[in-house]
Amino acid sequence: MTAPMKRRGPALAVVVLLVGGAMALIGGSAVADPVGGPNRHDGRFVFARIRYTDGYAGGGFAYRQDLPWAHDYPTAERNLMRILESITLVDPYMGQDGGVILMFDDPNLFRYPFAYMSEPGYWSLTEAETVGLRNYLLKGGFLIFDDFHGDLMWFNMEEQMRKVFPDLRWIELDATHPVYHSFFDIDSLVYDEVYRGDIPIFFGLFEDNDPNGRLLSVANHNNDIGDSWEWADTGWISIDLSNEAFKLGVNYIMYALTH
Image (tube, rainbow, N blue to C red; front, side, top):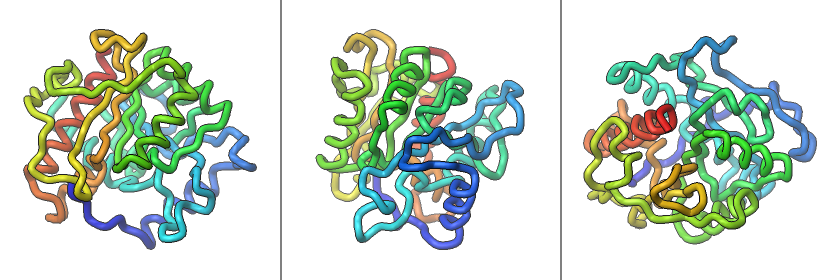
């Protein structure tokens, strides 16, 4: 999906200060406290974004000094929650922070049935996070990977997930899978626009490698639906494209809540 340039500057600085002030990380080994979200758990749906250790220390490659996991935060989740509230019976958390930020080794993650990760091509797992993610998915959690493209980024995500489930393999999804009919009927995963010249493709990770079994995770490869959520009300993204991105987001959440 075509994506405008990522925003940097004041908005990102707020994220950095917020996360930096709330998390005590030494070499990525300490458990970070959750950031954002409601003060108490009251039954509302809360969008959970995953913070992770950047495999390319220093915030990314030399040409990018932002935080890949924070891309589109918090506007993307705020806009998606507005859509979710307006068209479903789900009662989402509507705070200005958009949701909660956690790490995979945080036991609080088990409070949230849906989790979202941006740019897994930069992601690196610690041993504790590996165990936490494995337990989260086996106990019913549902994880979305988004905003990554090309072979290099795919291979890193695949390598990290192989630590979690050495025997599971990603299986290409098509529009017949129930996840694409959990609320909206999405009859095609083919888009007129492409992301950075690559054709969007969707993969699923299934329990026991059974495509008829429980779907643990979806990888939106060569996609950036979070960008479409973020920029939906700015005119930078076409209405048709942002609508499709919102449909995918709503369907993923509804699938997570019902499976």
